[in-house]
Length: 334
Image 1 (cartoon, rainbow, N blue to C red):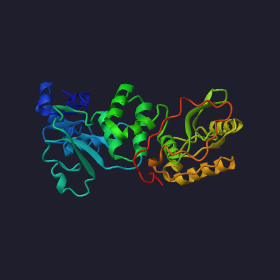
Image 2: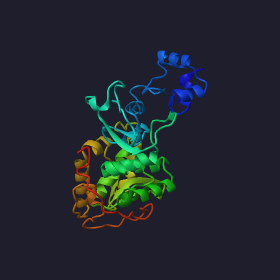
Image 3: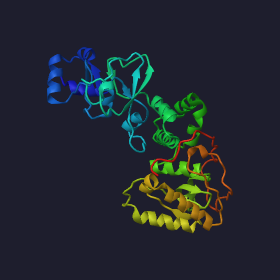
Image 4: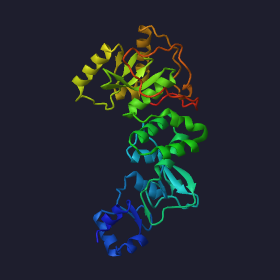
């Protein structure tokens, strides 16, 4: 029997008893281990994941991926590097290093992991190595910077990872932090676009998303104060659409807006330049705004002046209601 295929088909990790129940013999397991198609993260457990896989490392410690680590493993929008966040049962004992099964976690050097004691229950016989996504996102909202939490919510809504019922339940559980759900949107296309929207709003600017122009046949990512069209390139090496993007910039200018197209790299690492450019563009158009420091706790503070969108621009949906939230400090990437 192909034990590795059996394990992969049941989520990626099975214990020895369950493997025997499914028909695998000890000989099958030894052969798979020798061939390298199976690994043992913990005693009695067999996994089809590579040893460097986040899920394997979490299981080696004694739990499953949670929080930002779970989101990253699922391909979500994550900014920068993070320690490995692991959910373990409250009765867990003998936790190991994520790097070596024969070393206790407390004795390991440079074991960049964070353990969250979450429930008395543990995986029974099989595991996917990742907690339920709603649980992971709730932890993100509680411990990560607000702009990162909003980006994760944007991703979950854009990709359909959470439906409206799950989103409403998450919002209820978050209590005072429910404003993070309110700050997210369904139609954001990338991490840098999400960050740009959140940071511009945190600076006190009015930002509309997915605004129609050119007789409603095309949409602009973000329109700031009804005057600046911000088109964020989601790929740092966005070259294959050069002519198309220049044509869009011309069309945006003909529609009466100032076209601003920051790259993903500018949003991630040089945000202050992007914000300063937006501020200057607004001043040149006679729109005077008092920009706040880009801390997400500034969300909801109005700018000095508001301008309605030029004729022909149709904001998609009603303006969102912003709630004053926790301070997140300077945005990452500055």
